[in-house]
Length: 202
Image (cartoon, rainbow, N blue to C red; front, top):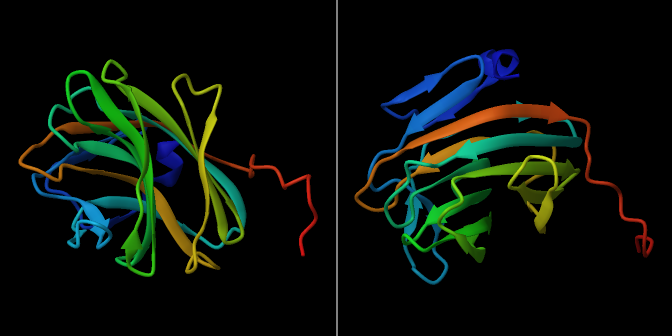
């Protein structure tokens, strides 16, 4: 489905080395590129390349498969992103740590402060699917190792995620490293994140 999106995809910080074909997108990361705002580390990094679509649709689901076989240095990462501006964005990815383990996690940044929710997974995992769903200004991120069975990573609210938004993919290498990130099987569908069936809204 990439070929149907090509004309609508827009770069934020276009990388020097990338390729967009009808069935895959490749981004070669540059050293010292990252997305992070303030929390704990007290630094602000806002220079990762981001490739996004724009929409005002309030209910949808975006799916993509990431291949990070070539990642080899601490914090090398690639995944999904919703980048609104430097102070408001979210991302989900697998970040390389060691030859034994890596971090599957997500970051939500609201009004200039990032969080980071992670779980350790085996370093043998070299691909990951993500499913990103929107219900107005609330969002759900899910992941899958096979593209069939998805597990919830987090549900979050984006204070600036109302109306028109931008979402897509990113890749970066926060330290002195570079690798080729590969994205395939991009797909946009009706929202698969069902409305809550429990307690009624206040």
